[in-house]
Image 1 (tube, rainbow, N blue to C red):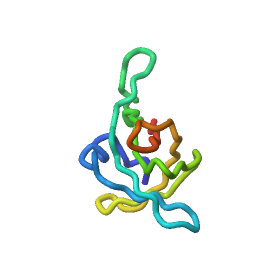
Image 2: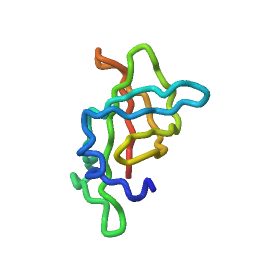
Image 3: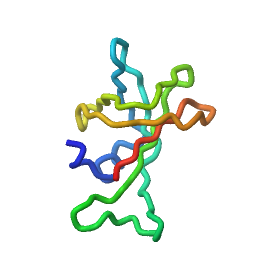
Length: 103
């Protein structure tokens, strides 16, 4: 299913809440705060004819809960459950930030 996800899949979901399902715990809420195209060393964002355009997602979670980098199951009512690898990249003063890369 992840292969079908594109930047356009997530852009309508900006500023919406997702659930991060953590094993043996209550779901952790996270807001999707950015959907960005990724640029390669040539300045291109194109992935080629058989590849999707690479992009990143940035989520903001609660500041009192830092999840380690790993694959998590996410859920959103519009696109359903899916699994992605996220990395904590620090705090922005409003919460903990997590990044996912699709290439």
